Image (cartoon, rainbow, N blue to C red; front, side, top):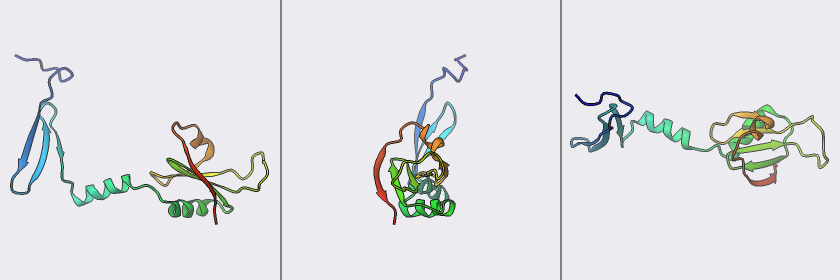
Length: 127
């Protein structure tokens, strides 16, 4: 008998085409995984929602619903950071609010700052 340990067993892929609907799929014979190249409308909607980034207007609306005073934005590659800039250095008080582009989640700045890969895209005044 052959090796039955799935950790070392070869994973053979087979390509199948359903001629009636023109759907291509790859099936993993070793683990029974099927990857179809055509999604149902519900699956595609979920994928599109995940892949769509939060735009600036949506992020600003979320931030304003949680923070009354906003006049400045720093856009990062993965988030918008809204704050109230008085033009003077302050210690504590009115802290920035972060809106994540991928989910729309609101975070405090410390929670965001400890993440890797935060790169500034631009800074500008909010009207």
